[in-house]
Image (cartoon, rainbow, N blue to C red; front, side):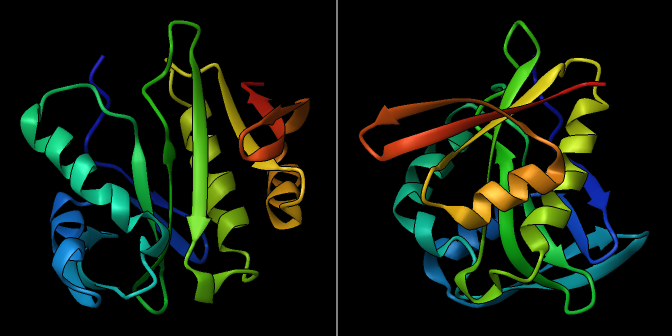
Length: 182
C-alpha cells in the first residue's frame, strides 16, 4: 500500500500538512527559511525556523536518501504542525510506518522546544488521530512515551488514548497507549 503523499488537516489554531520534501531538503543547509504551501485554497509562505526538526537533524540525511532512492515506496504519513496565525512550523507529527495488516499505526509527535506547553501537541494530536481513524485502512492508533514525560501523558489522555501497558527498554520505563476506531 502506498500512503498518500499530500494532505492538509485543519484545526482551530493549526494546520497539519504532509511534510514537504522541499522543507526537508532545505533544512539540511538552513536554519531559517520559508516554503510556499497551499493552505485553505491559497498559497501561504510558511516559516520553518531553527527549532523545527532540531532534535532530528542527525537522522535527516538518511530519511532523504531513502525517499530519493525509491520515491514510490510506501511511506508513513508524516506531517508538519503549523501555527495558522503566525504561519510558522511549530512541530511534527506522524506515523512510524504505514498501517500494518491489522490496521494499526504508531504515531510520534514533537513540538519545537520554544513552542512546548502551548497546546499544539494536544490540538494537532487530536486532529491527526481523528484523521487517521477516519481512514478505512486504520483500525487503531498506538503511541508510546516515557513514564517520566508528564506532558506527553497529558496529551495522550486528553486525545482519548487508553493505557495498554508499561514496559522497560533501553530508554527506560515506557507507557504504551491505544485509541481504537469507535
